[in-house]
Image (cartoon, rainbow, N blue to C red; front, side, top):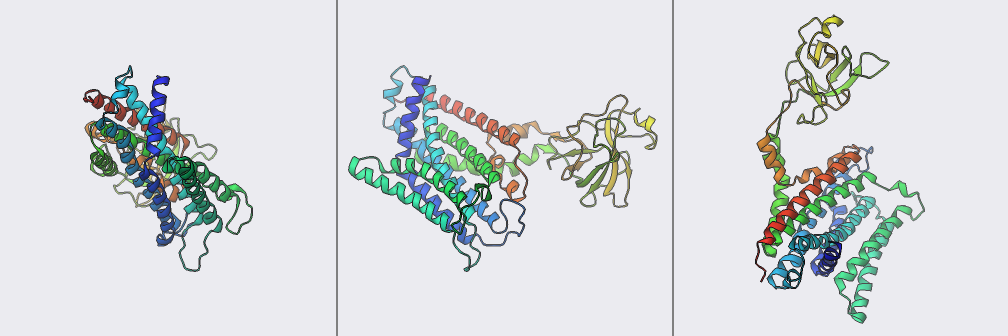
Length: 453
């Protein structure tokens, strides 16, 4: 497998980065990031608690969207050039005529295209990080960031100059040489920017380092790889224009899937959002034993009236999935009697409403021998429900067919100063790998039945 796939991947990678469109789109991305620092000054907030604040929130939004769109276009252009064009020109016969499986051919082409897309994406993301460091020029009195301009333009100038020189004297491919030089030079330029502040003084690299934004960039890179798999599958049967349209169609459908399909998958009604959750026993925050009580304060009055005895559910997700407590039962015994509490079925119930608006109440674990299972106690920011969340499995199946690129979009977490959990990044990587495997399997099925003779 290795001796068969790696040469195919290497050839596909070289063919991909030799396309002039790849270098042009990468440089266009850098130019657009420059424009973004000029035209995103709309005062989107003044909070300084996160990695971006004020106008820079919009800068990050537009910058990520720029890379997202260009990545989708790159996937369509590159995949078509290395797959569909070889089929149309019959050059693929030189490979499949040998004892090389079509499955390994598709895998090798995908790996080569992915390598080229990753190289281009790294350069584009460095341009974005440079723009974030430069920040938005909200007024004419704002000074430009000298190190950012010097090092970023220097990296581009050196790469293009060396590519032109080697092309003239040695005949090397200009786009290939320029892109391969841009990758390390842009990374070195960004490291240099981290070491020097706006006034050309040495600083600690952590001063301008944005780890959460880098995680968001990593997630965006995974989304681009999923689109690359889509382009690879489409290019086994379609030409360049059709493949690009398929990529754009999947891109748009994935952004609309939450509205048209996703909102019908999990059905529940939010009662309110927790502002404060405190244990009645101040010595511990445990909530996994019968009789344990929590005092809940909502952000505002609940959307439905809450009464003593109502079941209580909570979740970190506004759609109610997954629930943090497995089950709840309506409590009918006297709330002041601890013995009665343990005679009911396990559950978490409202035992007392403390305010006329019902925005403050107590909830308690009830059950005979054991409490209902919970993943953690309720906490600030959780969504409150009075019923379990129902799942529409038909809608879930339809929702899962198209890759949901919303999962890869971490902008809201950055702008709301919510850390991106490493576990989420791991799950997102698994999600991306599953979709990549599915689309590559589809590519193999389509290519196996195609006549290339």
